[in-house]
Length: 80
Ligand SMILES: [Zn+2]
Image (tube, rainbow, N blue to C red; front, top):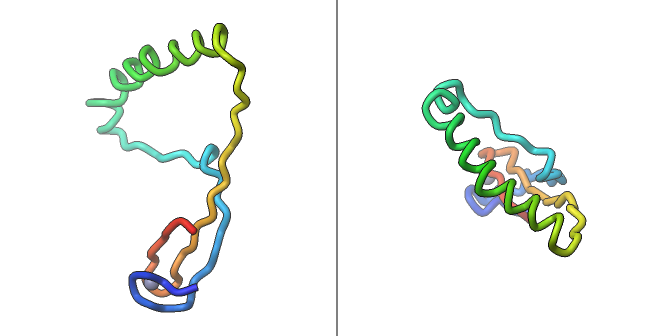
């Protein structure tokens, strides 16, 4: 495999579980955006999801595994 950025073939491939992957958010994010955004997101995303889960069709949540290639030369990461 060849890195599209630097054309190096020093590339490692890793499988990442996207569901388990959590992004860390900074303190400032939580002070200014986090609390109301999370509330907003919860009301507008979680509630319809719950209603849909109760009344709608049952759908199994499958954790998606994504294969990433990471260039050891320049650090570029992309989906395979
Ligand atoms: Zn590279």
